Image (tube, rainbow, N blue to C red; front, top):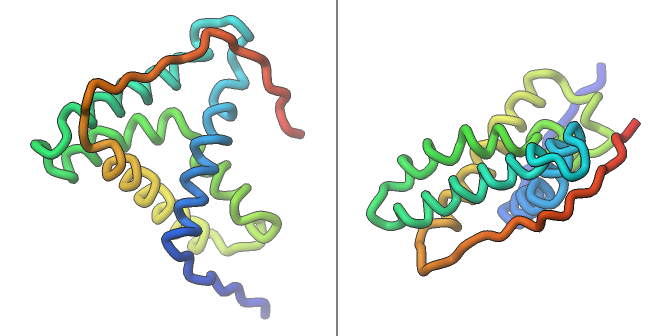
Length: 140
């Protein structure tokens, strides 16, 4: 019988996952849109709007409220399952389903928590989406 052990992941490792999510997951959601198609930037703009709302709510809004507001947007615009699988690497397919589910739940909580914690104050910041969109080839 083969057993799988999940090593504890420290805060730095989870922060790496979140950084990977930001860099890698947005293109995963954009690959279905045609270059130049306004729908290609829609997920990024949805995230920007949600983050600005959380920032403006800031300290006057409890963390749990910011978390609940950001969670559905983050889950919609990021392909967190794909980012997690890529982050775990070649051993992902061999992990038992219950371990995958536990890791996915923890990764979602950590990712949303990181955004809710980091985007908690507003001082006139804004996001600008570049109108240049390029097609990204799908991985086989």
